[in-house]
Length: 169
Image (cartoon, rainbow, N blue to C red; front, top):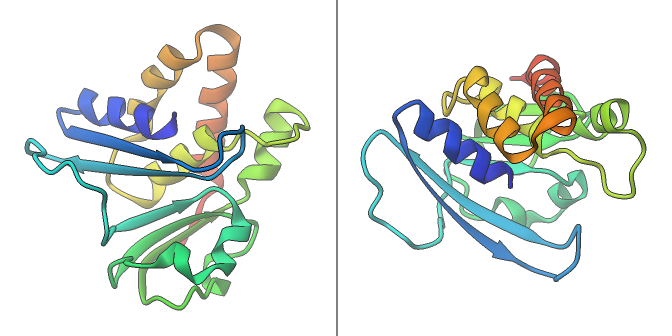
């Protein structure tokens, strides 16, 4: 869902986007990998992304698995949902940007305690801060379109808090 909202924000800025989801376990909270391409020109390639420029990792426990960074380009960007400081993050790859955000805690503050925290929109704010992919303001309309009413307002607030609380190194 987050990748779709990022794609819509990119479209609103006159960019091109392509989203390819790959689902693991068929349950809420199961494994999901989403490939997202953004460009200033039309995108013709429709395969997975094997050498990503960036990784957005929603579950901090995944960073322990070396496979999660497999193929990440040298000098790439990692955005991680973790209270750890970016300077303390060592994932075994030479990175350009590292951004961390304690999205789980922010989710609890905004949405309350949940079995599976809602971190997508918080991390979208982190993405806007750590990359030049989309502007923070471009995310608000896709969020409100996806989540109308009060839920959308809470998610916009979450996105803003994610932007403000993200630490980039």
